[in-house]
Image 1 (cartoon, rainbow, N blue to C red):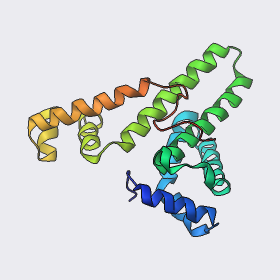
Image 2: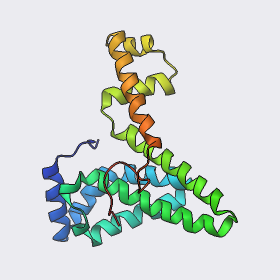
Image 3: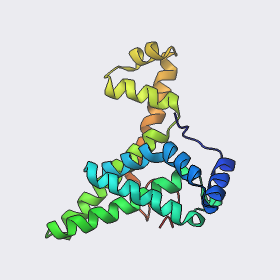
Length: 188
């Protein structure tokens, strides 16, 4: 299973391997981030086939432009997520512009997809203890007492984890200038 917090050293080495044209590096990167990329693209586009296309585009871009990632700006995971989000939103805008007469409706749909993708990114990126507490509380409909018992932690710790997880999720609506996942600009 891929780890959510790849060390910066791994990020730099991966970029160097990609720049040298190592196909094995692309395969390793794909194994680590394909589910993240596909999930974000699907969340924005709501279409399995379109998400497959964005996944191919993202990894093609990474393969062809490994130098566009700057390890000093943040983790490779954030850069890949930002790239995915931007390509998916661009595809959504291109697709929906032809179907919708109202640019206001298109922007509302793009904003909604952006918030959903950002929330998904936040949940998949949060530490496992927080994510486990949120999953029990919201997907399994467990209260904080049941969550504490399930996880073998105190009720106070369960409340703390749930509160922190919800605070992180609340930032999904705080989209900056790019409107994308947390990270930095300039992905494309």
